[in-house]
Length: 204
Image (tube, rainbow, N blue to C red):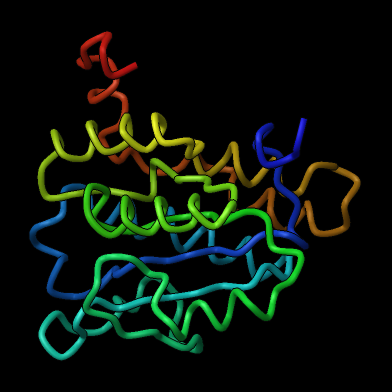
């Protein structure tokens, strides 16, 4: 069975996507501080493991810059107006990674830009890992249904810590001690437990 179907990830064939975590969304997205904190943790791990990172901004003239607490100040920001992150400039970045297999996806909103990005990446044959505790929406109904829809379409819905431990793989890795410090405390609660506890069996 292909690694993509198994959902295995390795740093050298992965890329981290950070989608539209901008100032104007701050007051409207449920659990915004928590999902940004988790995405920042994913970014730190990506930098330690030398995983490439793509950061997008949706219509930054109107929606503002990426929030500083993400920790992405030194990274290029790709502006966009379409919902998918796979704009031509990002496609060029992907084209420079011939061994790319896995997209690690964080950001907002789950039913909009996360959904469109995941479907486009899946269509290109890439394995998409949606970091559920680093994705949110204004409506938690939209968030829950979108996560279910993503699974139906073939994306792998996971948590930040689960994905981080898959990436590092071995406690003997010299970078593990630094990563262990990042995950020593559980990821902040972004409301997922209440969503999943209350969901209909049809969304499982």
